[in-house]
Every structure is written in C-alpha cells, then in structure tokens.
Length: 288
Figure 1 (cartoon, helix red, strand yellow):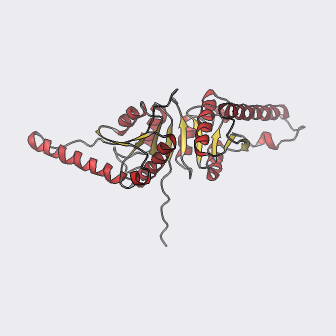
Figure 2 (tube, helix red, strand yellow; figure 1 turned 90 degrees about the vertical axis):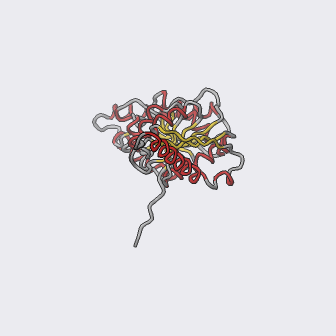
Figure 3 (cartoon, one colour; figure 1 turned 45 degrees about the vertical axis):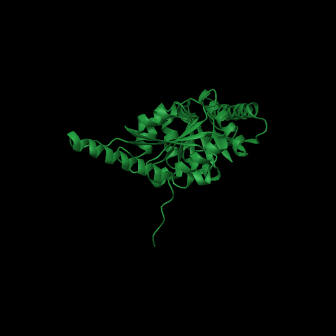
C-alpha cells in the first residue's frame, strides 16, 4: 500500500498524481491521508468554538475528497481510499507509514497546522520512517527513461541501490549509479597525479563493489556507472536533471562523501530536478 499526504496545496495534489502512478506500477492500493489537530474531532456541537471545529472538519473532508478525486482521475484502475488522522503531522505520518510500502509527500505545503507537506516536515518524516519516503518536486512532464541513485558504500546506500534497481525495472528504465567524492588531493607535480589516479581508482572500485550482484538480480536494467570528483549534492542534482527519479539513503558514511539526510538529502529536497526518494537505513542489530 502507498500512503500519500494531502493538505489542500497544489504540491499535495501533484504528489497524489505521482503516487497513483507509482501505485499502478506496483499493482498496489493508494491511501490518501490528511492530518489535523485532534480537538476539532473530539469536541461536541455545543462546545465553545464549535463553529471553528466544524469549519476545520469540513475543510479536512474537502481536502480528502479532492485528493481522492485527483487520484481516480489520474488512474481509475487503482484502488483508492482516504483517512483523516488526528495529531502532529510528523508523528502521525511516521506511525501511519509503518503499514505502508512507500510514503509520498509534496515538497512544500500551506504552512501552519495543515502544512504537513512543508520541506521541514518532509525532511523530519524521511529521517524516521520504516519505509521509503518520496518527496515529489518537479515531476517530469514526460518519462526520461532513467532512475538515478546516489552510492557511497554505506549500508543506507546499499538500501538505496536495491530500491533504485527495483524502480528502474518497474519503469523499464535505465539506472545511473552516481558516486561523488570531494576530498582534496594532497601533493603536487607527478606525485599529485599518481595520487589522484590511485584515489580515483579506489572510488571506482567502491562503486563497482557496491553494485556487485544487483545486475544479476535485475538483468533487464541497463546500468551506467558515474564517478565524479565533486560534491555529492552537485553530482546528484545534475543527475536528477535527466532522471525520472532520484534515490538516496537516509544517511551515509559521514563527511563530505556521506549521503546524510541533514546535508545532502536536505539540499536535494530543495534542489532536485525530479522526485526524490529517501530510503531508510537498515535497522542496527541489538547486542545482548
């Protein structure tokens, strides 16, 4: 099941359109949800501010109706349902996502209580869900035929690679695996050149090792390997300009090369030229 949040903003309806297409690809159902404060749902009709509560409930119902209508207009074959949930948008979406295969949100929203799709909220949710989170911004008008994935050799990066291969296969698209490194090179003269060549060779091996075995599992996916000596944000932003989807892990190795939610993913949330999917890091085993 795919979960998509709405708040009455154009970005939310854009997220619904993207989510229903994703649901169709997967043969999955779609649940349209809206989160609002709990008090309007709990108050009686004769309570103080009952009119305000009624207005908020009616507005929430209208948002859900509009979201479901948009989804059914986009693809009537997908089973669509709606749900109104009370509470803090961040906490409620994280909890609701436990039942979902994918959570979809817009890149920005209305602000205030109903603005659950603001970049800050989307960023917080993406860092704490157990399922991947799609932040929909700049969806291409036409398919570009490529999925891009950021690779940094971390466990979170490995999860992103697996998701990206599956998405490319579903879409009949190619996969561009991007590994960017931005550590400064030491030395000068011929020694600097030799050092640069050794470092670049090591980065290419890191990418090849991270991709090992995936092409055997997805032989239908054509893979393009890209290694860049530049900041990951710039490399992935550039790759997103030619992709239908950009996939990154929620956190990586750290430092300049790490695909960290607070740095690289945060920047891509605002600057990616296509929808961005952040995959959760694998659970850390508990030692007894």
